[in-house]
Image (cartoon, rainbow, N blue to C red; front, side, top):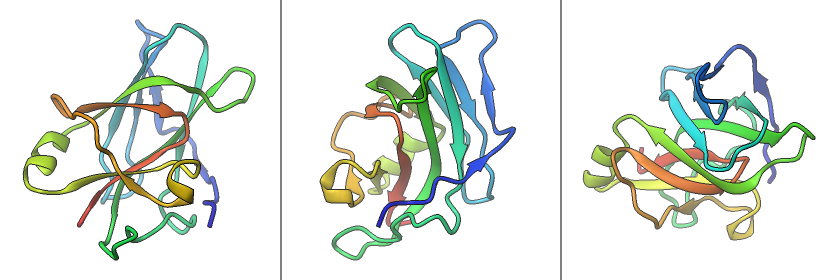
Length: 141
């Protein structure tokens, strides 16, 4: 089921010194502020998206519950979602992974429209994605 993309205004801060860096502020208590840095130069629009009542999956394929940490969209100035490398930093993510939590990504495109476990490296709470419309969480919560 595709998610509803409900934009939460005034939750994205653009870095004044680097137009490729953004902070996506949490909206709900369960969320965590997220920093992103787009690898390639360009002009980008970043939107904070709601995690609440928007159709995000609540479980993994194996039934494990998901806690969504943040949900956002990165678009080119033309309005198209990016499909290029960007770094995502969520404070405490490395510790969560070390504690046995799965890092979960849902982008609506990969894995037959199901959330999936991120299999790449998480270094200093940072990992890399390429789909500009992800929700990021952990499982189990």
